[in-house]
Every structure is written in C-alpha cells, then in structure tokens.
Amino acid sequence: MIPQIRKLKYAQPFVAFYLELSSGRVIKVATPDHIALAEAGPGQVVVLDDDGTWTALSGLHLASVATNDPRPRRQNGQNA
Image (cartoon, rainbow, N blue to C red):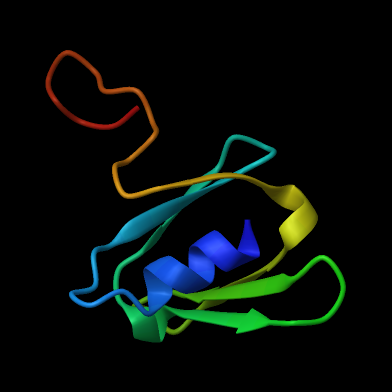
C-alpha cells in the first residue's frame, strides 16, 4: 500500500486522496504537503491536518487508498 500512496503523493497533477484505516476511520490527504512517508518496516505514514495536528499511522493499519471518499453518503449528499 505504501508504494501506491507514494505514487499518489508525487502524481502530477496532484489529486487529493483518502486513507481508510482498519478501524474504518477515513483520513483525507488534501495536498502532497499533508503527508510524509517513512521507509522502515511495514511503512509509517504521517498525515498533517490544516489545524497543525498530525496522525501517525502504521502501514499495517491501512485498509485502502482511494481518490474518492470511501465513506457512504447520506441521502442529503453528506458523508456519514
């Protein structure tokens, strides 16, 4: 999964993408500057939020990567 994330990070033009975790949580990667990747072990991913907070993830907890939001939509068009 880390090679796929790296490919999306460096894609030209960049397209925002989503990381779905094994817990079901979905994290949006808005720009290439919002994600950092490490090479060690199964891979470590750090996602930065606009508010200055960050989330560190183990590659073992990444369930999927997609360019569209994998969360189901409600009838009003909003994500669940």
